[in-house]
Length: 324
Image (cartoon, rainbow, N blue to C red; front, side):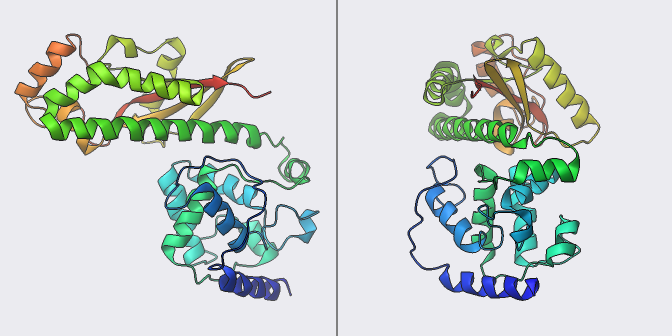
């Protein structure tokens, strides 16, 4: 019977997906910027239309659900795939072609059955998956108690996950702003122009973003270019931990820590991409001798070279006020 109900609900949702329904009051938090093709409002609407009939956060009890609540689904996927792209890719792959082999939540599949195949395109599924990753989801009133009964531990994910999401969003917005300006400078005048931009304009831009987000935003590394980016003691310990994990081939995950009763710190690894190598690559190879002379004039104590694409460059270090 439950499988039949799931199938009926899925059909109804597919027919209504293209309708322009009123989303009502927004029950979830997120920013209003576009995320993977959807605004926050569009993402919430898509989630309600396509997911909440079965994964209903307003269900009065666990026994009245047709599928696990979305906050539990997100918790499971984010534990397995903390990286945003991996999270979206694996969730999209399962929803597009659901099989028991691909299922990441075996017990719910045994209880509720395998979800029916959707007619949504992979792009539409990917957009919804991105919204789920990027936004805090509404959770049922009974969920914390249920989670504790099932897993024997407190449901502390809500607040820590909120801080993780906040840190990711701030780091992402800062990266987008910095990389956009840096690429523009590179197009105008190559490495000399880009180096001048980093030296004169990058820090004021980060400072302005810190004020906008009411945070303290830093990028730091064990091999710094600018002495201002030298890590503090705790930052150095986190960087050394990341370096050991990276050398062992382990996945590097963002970290949230309480610094004091009023302050939360968010740390996340930064990796080198191909574009970075023009200024941070191997001397005489991806970083020319001529360009490095320009860099050395601006940063006489530079240590930040010798990298290859994919190397661990450093990390984001973001601090914000703890919510009461």
